View 1 (spheres, rainbow, N blue to C red):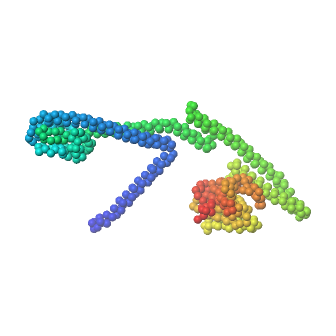
View 2 (view 1 turned 120 degrees about the horizontal axis):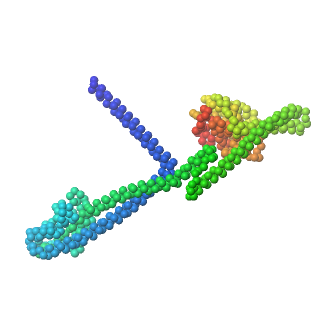
View 3 (view 1 turned 45 degrees about the horizontal axis):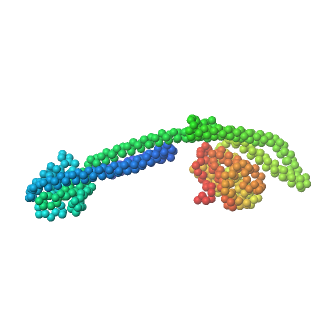
Length: 553
């Protein structure tokens, strides 16, 4: 039973380890992505980091190129010096060996071999346990004498195999000239760059020519180049760090005032108009600080003037609007009496009474809009929030606008979802927004159909009012919410508009933290989209309805 339990637990334990491994890899991947995102964000945000990193990178490239060139030149110089010294020394040793052979009286092979060994030991071999050269003596390929001796080497570890066939052939072909070659020679267990100099000596008693190969290891030169390379590497790292430090100091002197200017500019944009940059010295940064402060002084003066003018304008509009209400009430009473008695007047007088009543209605609407605008300008507008199903509000607005649509020949169609489009809104203000949009669509739709779309999303509700009339020319979508702006100044307002409806609608939408946007194309009509957050105080990120017909799915 216990064996069965162990067998059954194996796959479970393996699956658990695999799950922990996947979890660890996921955690590491998430940490790596977070770190990489932080580095990218820091790179984008820090001018100092970019300047210092770029300077260090360019400095590293320059140091690398310069170091490589100097290293190659030094290596070439050491190599040429070593070859020349090897050739001079080999020439001198060859002459000594030839003198010894000229004075030798050896005749037989045994005597020649002993003589060659003595010359190798006394004159050609380098003294000490770590010789500076190795010598190999071998029969030349051009030697056809019957007397022959074997190949001799100053040390047993370096033989004739160290000399290439190419060099042997060149020495045999030109016995009167030295031949040199740079190559790798195996000495013991190491491959060492070496200079091999080959020359020819004539043995006594017609023994014929023999080649002497002097092998000069370049271990000292290699060690010197390693030392120089390490020195270049350390110097390059130190120089790059010094360049980075210099770039940091220089960049700090430039970036700090610029950063301070940015901070001061942010505080100025936040309304703290008394903020200024410290200006010291007479350099370019001091001139920048002085110019910035002068600009701030000028802006502060102009903003205060504009604020004063705006306050005067707001007060004027508010006072005039309030002062006009009393005489307007009296005029309304008189006009109502005249209008009610119009049937007793002559036809021209009766028509004048009707026109007077219509214009007085429009004047009262304009006065009400001016009072509403003055409340927005004074910051006194407030919301009376309650949960409202926007479908009912749209239905009331459409029902109120249908008589006007019938007179203009337009058909209003509502496209609403089956589910409630509920949001926390001030229904009076939202109804006023929708009434302005629908009435404008009917007036500018030239008798075409008007479509009202209602949609609800996770965080927002939206209403789009679409007409198929004259549309908007390029750039007019941003101007339609300007006070008293008209797309066509020659076009009459047959429905008695005041020119402030869309401006008030935009302020109502902003009061809800919502959006009111316009789109239009000449000859294709226009669309106005109202987007409101479902819960009061929330911010909008997207609308459940597209603004442009091209975005319709």
